[in-house]
Image (cartoon, rainbow, N blue to C red):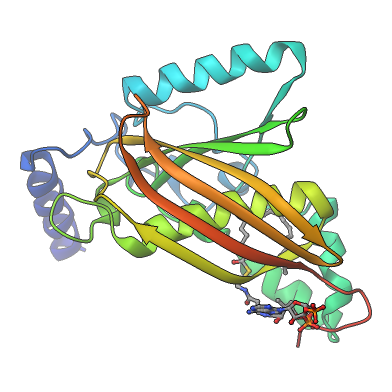
Length: 238
Ligand SMILES: CCCCC/C=C\C/C=C\C/C=C\C/C=C\CCCC(=O)SCCNC(=O)CCNC(=O)[C@H](O)C(C)(C)COP(=O)(O)OP(=O)(O)OC[C@H]1O[C@@H](n2cnc3c(N)ncnc32)[C@H](O)[C@@H]1OP(=O)(O)O
Protein backbone atom coordinates (compact mmCIF):
# COMPACT_ATOMS: atom_id res chain seq x y z
CA UNK A 1 0.00 0.00 0.00
CA UNK A 2 2.75 2.40 1.14
CA UNK A 3 4.88 1.38 -1.85
CA UNK A 4 2.04 2.07 -4.27
CA UNK A 5 1.40 5.53 -2.72
CA UNK A 6 5.10 6.42 -3.01
CA UNK A 7 5.12 5.24 -6.61
CA UNK A 8 2.05 7.38 -7.43
CA UNK A 9 3.61 10.43 -5.77
CA UNK A 10 6.79 9.85 -7.80
CA UNK A 11 4.76 9.61 -10.99
CA UNK A 12 2.96 12.85 -10.15
CA UNK A 13 6.25 14.61 -9.43
CA UNK A 14 7.76 13.41 -12.72
CA UNK A 15 4.69 14.42 -14.72
CA UNK A 16 4.44 17.85 -13.12
CA UNK A 17 8.10 18.57 -13.93
CA UNK A 18 7.82 17.56 -17.57
CA UNK A 19 7.63 20.47 -20.03
CA UNK A 20 4.76 20.44 -22.53
CA UNK A 21 2.63 18.18 -20.37
CA UNK A 22 -0.89 19.27 -19.46
CA UNK A 23 -1.35 20.11 -15.78
CA UNK A 24 -2.76 17.20 -13.88
CA UNK A 25 -6.38 17.33 -12.81
CA UNK A 26 -7.06 19.54 -9.83
CA UNK A 27 -8.81 16.64 -8.12
CA UNK A 28 -6.79 13.63 -6.93
CA UNK A 29 -7.40 11.08 -9.69
CA UNK A 30 -7.13 8.25 -7.15
CA UNK A 31 -9.76 9.63 -4.82
CA UNK A 32 -12.66 7.25 -4.03
CA UNK A 33 -15.00 9.44 -6.11
CA UNK A 34 -13.10 8.25 -9.17
CA UNK A 35 -13.44 4.57 -8.36
CA UNK A 36 -15.27 2.14 -10.64
CA UNK A 37 -18.78 2.92 -9.51
CA UNK A 38 -22.12 3.05 -11.26
CA UNK A 39 -21.97 6.84 -10.86
CA UNK A 40 -18.83 6.96 -13.04
CA UNK A 41 -20.14 4.37 -15.51
CA UNK A 42 -23.28 6.40 -16.19
CA UNK A 43 -21.60 9.82 -16.14
CA UNK A 44 -21.30 11.54 -19.50
CA UNK A 45 -17.50 11.74 -19.74
CA UNK A 46 -17.50 14.03 -22.76
CA UNK A 47 -18.41 17.06 -20.66
CA UNK A 48 -15.77 19.56 -19.42
CA UNK A 49 -13.75 18.50 -16.37
CA UNK A 50 -10.93 20.19 -14.42
CA UNK A 51 -8.23 18.53 -16.56
CA UNK A 52 -9.39 20.25 -19.75
CA UNK A 53 -7.14 23.09 -20.86
CA UNK A 54 -8.35 26.41 -22.22
CA UNK A 55 -8.28 25.34 -25.90
CA UNK A 56 -10.42 22.31 -25.09
CA UNK A 57 -12.96 24.37 -23.16
CA UNK A 58 -13.14 27.08 -25.83
CA UNK A 59 -13.70 24.55 -28.62
CA UNK A 60 -16.30 22.68 -26.57
CA UNK A 61 -18.17 25.93 -25.91
CA UNK A 62 -18.00 26.87 -29.61
CA UNK A 63 -19.50 23.53 -30.68
CA UNK A 64 -22.17 23.67 -27.96
CA UNK A 65 -23.10 27.13 -29.29
CA UNK A 66 -23.30 25.72 -32.83
CA UNK A 67 -25.55 22.94 -31.50
CA UNK A 68 -28.20 25.42 -30.34
CA UNK A 69 -29.88 25.60 -33.78
CA UNK A 70 -29.84 21.81 -34.17
CA UNK A 71 -27.28 21.72 -37.01
CA UNK A 72 -24.73 20.08 -34.67
CA UNK A 73 -25.37 17.52 -31.96
CA UNK A 74 -23.14 16.72 -28.98
CA UNK A 75 -22.66 12.95 -28.65
CA UNK A 76 -22.52 11.80 -25.02
CA UNK A 77 -19.95 9.17 -24.06
CA UNK A 78 -19.83 6.70 -21.18
CA UNK A 79 -17.37 4.25 -19.68
CA UNK A 80 -19.99 1.59 -20.03
CA UNK A 81 -23.67 1.86 -20.62
CA UNK A 82 -26.32 -0.28 -22.16
CA UNK A 83 -27.87 1.57 -25.04
CA UNK A 84 -30.12 0.41 -27.85
CA UNK A 85 -26.96 0.02 -29.95
CA UNK A 86 -25.27 -2.27 -27.43
CA UNK A 87 -28.53 -4.23 -27.25
CA UNK A 88 -28.35 -4.49 -31.05
CA UNK A 89 -24.99 -6.30 -31.01
CA UNK A 90 -26.31 -9.20 -28.89
CA UNK A 91 -27.75 -10.89 -31.96
CA UNK A 92 -24.20 -11.37 -33.29
CA UNK A 93 -23.21 -13.57 -30.34
CA UNK A 94 -24.38 -17.18 -30.09
CA UNK A 95 -24.18 -17.36 -26.29
CA UNK A 96 -26.31 -14.46 -25.04
CA UNK A 97 -25.67 -15.29 -21.34
CA UNK A 98 -21.88 -15.31 -21.74
CA UNK A 99 -22.10 -12.08 -23.74
CA UNK A 100 -24.13 -10.42 -20.99
CA UNK A 101 -21.54 -11.44 -18.37
CA UNK A 102 -18.73 -10.08 -20.53
CA UNK A 103 -20.54 -6.81 -21.13
CA UNK A 104 -21.17 -6.31 -17.42
CA UNK A 105 -17.36 -6.13 -16.89
CA UNK A 106 -16.62 -4.16 -20.02
CA UNK A 107 -15.52 -0.57 -20.41
CA UNK A 108 -15.08 1.48 -23.56
CA UNK A 109 -11.29 1.43 -24.02
CA UNK A 110 -10.76 5.20 -24.63
CA UNK A 111 -12.74 5.87 -21.41
CA UNK A 112 -10.77 3.42 -19.26
CA UNK A 113 -8.13 5.83 -17.90
CA UNK A 114 -8.72 8.22 -15.04
CA UNK A 115 -9.78 11.81 -15.65
CA UNK A 116 -7.08 13.89 -17.34
CA UNK A 117 -4.52 11.08 -17.67
CA UNK A 118 -5.58 9.55 -20.97
CA UNK A 119 -8.18 10.27 -23.60
CA UNK A 120 -10.16 13.47 -22.99
CA UNK A 121 -12.51 14.03 -25.89
CA UNK A 122 -15.90 15.19 -27.04
CA UNK A 123 -17.61 14.46 -30.34
CA UNK A 124 -20.10 16.52 -32.31
CA UNK A 125 -22.19 15.30 -35.22
CA UNK A 126 -23.00 17.69 -38.03
CA UNK A 127 -26.52 16.60 -38.85
CA UNK A 128 -26.60 18.53 -42.15
CA UNK A 129 -23.28 17.40 -43.63
CA UNK A 130 -23.29 14.03 -41.83
CA UNK A 131 -19.77 14.25 -40.45
CA UNK A 132 -18.26 14.09 -36.99
CA UNK A 133 -15.75 16.38 -35.33
CA UNK A 134 -13.87 15.16 -32.30
CA UNK A 135 -11.94 17.51 -30.04
CA UNK A 136 -9.20 15.57 -28.26
CA UNK A 137 -6.71 16.32 -25.52
CA UNK A 138 -4.22 13.49 -25.00
CA UNK A 139 -3.03 13.11 -21.40
CA UNK A 140 0.36 12.14 -19.94
CA UNK A 141 -0.33 8.37 -19.86
CA UNK A 142 -0.56 8.31 -23.66
CA UNK A 143 3.11 9.06 -24.24
CA UNK A 144 5.04 7.40 -27.04
CA UNK A 145 8.17 9.34 -28.06
CA UNK A 146 9.09 11.57 -25.09
CA UNK A 147 6.68 14.51 -24.93
CA UNK A 148 4.47 13.22 -27.73
CA UNK A 149 1.44 10.99 -28.12
CA UNK A 150 1.86 7.26 -28.80
CA UNK A 151 0.82 6.26 -32.34
CA UNK A 152 -1.53 3.65 -30.90
CA UNK A 153 -3.30 6.33 -28.87
CA UNK A 154 -3.69 8.43 -32.02
CA UNK A 155 -5.00 5.38 -33.88
CA UNK A 156 -7.46 4.73 -31.05
CA UNK A 157 -8.98 8.19 -31.34
CA UNK A 158 -9.07 7.97 -35.13
CA UNK A 159 -10.86 4.60 -34.92
CA UNK A 160 -13.27 5.90 -32.26
CA UNK A 161 -14.16 8.97 -34.34
CA UNK A 162 -14.51 7.08 -37.63
CA UNK A 163 -16.45 4.39 -35.74
CA UNK A 164 -18.88 6.95 -34.38
CA UNK A 165 -19.25 8.39 -37.90
CA UNK A 166 -20.01 4.91 -39.31
CA UNK A 167 -22.41 3.97 -36.52
CA UNK A 168 -24.33 7.24 -36.81
CA UNK A 169 -24.59 6.68 -40.58
CA UNK A 170 -25.61 3.00 -40.77
CA UNK A 171 -25.89 1.47 -37.29
CA UNK A 172 -23.70 -1.34 -35.96
CA UNK A 173 -20.48 -1.52 -38.00
CA UNK A 174 -16.91 -2.64 -37.37
CA UNK A 175 -13.52 -1.47 -38.60
CA UNK A 176 -12.31 -3.78 -41.38
CA UNK A 177 -9.25 -1.73 -42.31
CA UNK A 178 -7.56 1.45 -41.15
CA UNK A 179 -4.73 3.24 -42.89
CA UNK A 180 -3.00 6.09 -41.06
CA UNK A 181 -0.38 8.52 -42.23
CA UNK A 182 1.38 10.09 -39.22
CA UNK A 183 2.69 13.39 -40.56
CA UNK A 184 3.76 15.32 -37.46
CA UNK A 185 4.07 14.23 -33.82
CA UNK A 186 1.31 15.45 -31.52
CA UNK A 187 2.57 17.10 -28.31
CA UNK A 188 1.24 15.53 -25.11
CA UNK A 189 -1.43 17.67 -23.49
CA UNK A 190 -2.19 19.64 -26.64
CA UNK A 191 -5.67 19.82 -28.14
CA UNK A 192 -6.29 18.58 -31.66
CA UNK A 193 -9.34 18.44 -33.88
CA UNK A 194 -10.33 15.26 -35.75
CA UNK A 195 -12.57 15.86 -38.78
CA UNK A 196 -14.22 12.70 -40.10
CA UNK A 197 -16.67 11.91 -42.87
CA UNK A 198 -18.25 9.09 -44.85
CA UNK A 199 -16.86 9.28 -48.38
CA UNK A 200 -18.72 6.41 -50.02
CA UNK A 201 -21.18 3.63 -49.20
CA UNK A 202 -21.22 0.41 -51.25
CA UNK A 203 -23.73 -2.08 -49.92
CA UNK A 204 -22.53 -2.91 -46.37
CA UNK A 205 -19.16 -1.25 -46.96
CA UNK A 206 -18.48 2.29 -45.76
CA UNK A 207 -15.39 4.15 -46.83
CA UNK A 208 -14.48 6.91 -44.40
CA UNK A 209 -11.65 9.38 -43.99
CA UNK A 210 -10.41 11.85 -41.42
CA UNK A 211 -7.61 14.21 -40.59
CA UNK A 212 -6.17 15.53 -37.35
CA UNK A 213 -5.26 19.18 -37.19
CA UNK A 214 -4.06 21.68 -34.63
CA UNK A 215 -6.63 24.08 -33.17
CA UNK A 216 -5.37 26.90 -35.45
CA UNK A 217 -5.68 24.42 -38.39
CA UNK A 218 -2.10 25.24 -39.50
CA UNK A 219 -0.64 21.81 -38.69
CA UNK A 220 -1.92 18.56 -40.17
CA UNK A 221 -0.79 15.86 -37.74
CA UNK A 222 -2.34 12.78 -39.31
CA UNK A 223 -4.58 11.62 -42.13
CA UNK A 224 -6.47 8.35 -42.30
CA UNK A 225 -8.75 6.32 -44.51
CA UNK A 226 -10.78 3.35 -43.39
CA UNK A 227 -13.25 0.69 -44.37
CA UNK A 228 -16.07 -0.15 -41.98
CA UNK A 229 -18.45 -3.01 -42.65
CA UNK A 230 -22.03 -2.87 -41.45
CA UNK A 231 -22.63 -6.13 -39.62
CA UNK A 232 -24.88 -8.67 -41.26
CA UNK A 233 -27.58 -9.77 -38.79
CA UNK A 234 -27.42 -13.26 -40.35
CA UNK A 235 -23.71 -13.66 -39.46
CA UNK A 236 -22.50 -14.33 -35.90
CA UNK A 237 -19.27 -12.63 -34.80
CA UNK A 238 -17.93 -15.61 -32.87
C1 LIG B 1 -19.46 -5.15 -32.09
C2 LIG B 1 -19.44 -3.87 -32.87
C3 LIG B 1 -19.51 -2.63 -32.07
C4 LIG B 1 -20.64 -1.81 -32.52
C5 LIG B 1 -20.86 -0.58 -31.67
C6 LIG B 1 -22.00 -0.78 -30.77
C7 LIG B 1 -22.37 0.18 -29.91
C8 LIG B 1 -21.79 1.53 -29.98
C9 LIG B 1 -21.79 2.19 -28.70
C10 LIG B 1 -20.74 3.01 -28.38
C11 LIG B 1 -19.49 3.04 -29.23
C12 LIG B 1 -19.20 4.37 -29.76
C13 LIG B 1 -18.35 4.59 -30.78
C14 LIG B 1 -17.62 3.50 -31.47
C15 LIG B 1 -16.22 3.48 -31.06
C16 LIG B 1 -15.30 2.77 -31.65
C17 LIG B 1 -15.52 1.92 -32.82
C18 LIG B 1 -14.38 0.94 -32.85
C19 LIG B 1 -14.65 -0.09 -33.88
C20 LIG B 1 -13.63 -1.16 -33.78
O1 LIG B 1 -12.53 -0.96 -33.38
S1 LIG B 1 -14.05 -2.70 -34.25
C21 LIG B 1 -12.64 -3.70 -33.78
C22 LIG B 1 -11.69 -4.04 -34.88
N1 LIG B 1 -12.36 -4.72 -35.94
C23 LIG B 1 -12.63 -6.03 -35.90
O2 LIG B 1 -12.33 -6.73 -34.98
C24 LIG B 1 -13.32 -6.59 -37.12
C25 LIG B 1 -12.91 -8.03 -37.41
N2 LIG B 1 -13.47 -8.40 -38.70
C26 LIG B 1 -14.72 -8.90 -38.82
O3 LIG B 1 -15.39 -9.20 -37.82
C27 LIG B 1 -15.24 -9.09 -40.19
O4 LIG B 1 -14.21 -9.25 -41.09
C28 LIG B 1 -16.16 -7.91 -40.63
C29 LIG B 1 -17.33 -7.77 -39.66
C30 LIG B 1 -15.37 -6.59 -40.70
C31 LIG B 1 -16.70 -8.23 -42.02
O5 LIG B 1 -17.19 -9.54 -41.99
P1 LIG B 1 -18.58 -9.91 -42.67
O6 LIG B 1 -18.69 -11.41 -42.63
O7 LIG B 1 -19.69 -9.13 -42.11
O8 LIG B 1 -18.41 -9.41 -44.15
P2 LIG B 1 -17.52 -10.02 -45.34
O9 LIG B 1 -16.29 -10.69 -44.89
O10 LIG B 1 -18.45 -10.81 -46.23
O11 LIG B 1 -17.09 -8.67 -46.11
C32 LIG B 1 -18.07 -7.78 -46.61
C33 LIG B 1 -17.40 -6.96 -47.68
O12 LIG B 1 -16.31 -6.22 -47.08
C34 LIG B 1 -15.05 -6.57 -47.70
N3 LIG B 1 -14.02 -6.61 -46.66
C35 LIG B 1 -14.12 -7.15 -45.43
N4 LIG B 1 -12.98 -6.96 -44.77
C36 LIG B 1 -12.17 -6.27 -45.58
C37 LIG B 1 -10.85 -5.76 -45.45
N5 LIG B 1 -10.15 -5.93 -44.32
N6 LIG B 1 -10.32 -5.09 -46.50
C38 LIG B 1 -11.01 -4.90 -47.63
N7 LIG B 1 -12.28 -5.35 -47.81
C39 LIG B 1 -12.82 -6.04 -46.81
C40 LIG B 1 -15.31 -7.95 -48.30
O13 LIG B 1 -14.40 -8.20 -49.35
C41 LIG B 1 -16.73 -7.82 -48.77
O14 LIG B 1 -16.75 -7.02 -49.94
P3 LIG B 1 -17.69 -7.37 -51.19
O15 LIG B 1 -19.11 -7.37 -50.67
O16 LIG B 1 -17.45 -6.30 -52.20
O17 LIG B 1 -17.27 -8.73 -51.64
